Image (cartoon, rainbow, N blue to C red; front, side):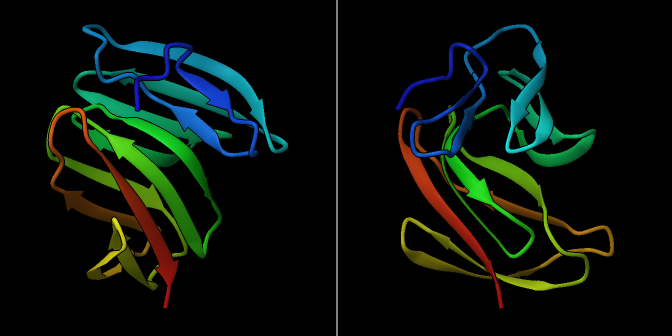
Length: 137
């Protein structure tokens, strides 16, 4: 997998790919139309943040590259690559419990807060990707 040079794009299968953790300075792209909404990406080596209509969808520290991102309030799946371990936050349904799998292995259950934010960390080796699936229990 490689970084998304254009910062954000729609794939042929209808999923989103975004982020470039190799950038040394924060770079943004706004007003990207996808699935009836307007998306904004901010990305560089320290953080990657995707917003839909002004609301946070995904954020990682440090920055990451995400491919094949799809989902709604009950489930999300994506592949992620970063220079090492990351912490990420996604927005789902408030005060709900979700199961998280990483590369097909259960990473346990995680509860969203009252605002619907789910935060987790995963171990990554530089240049390697992980497949993340999060689904409501």
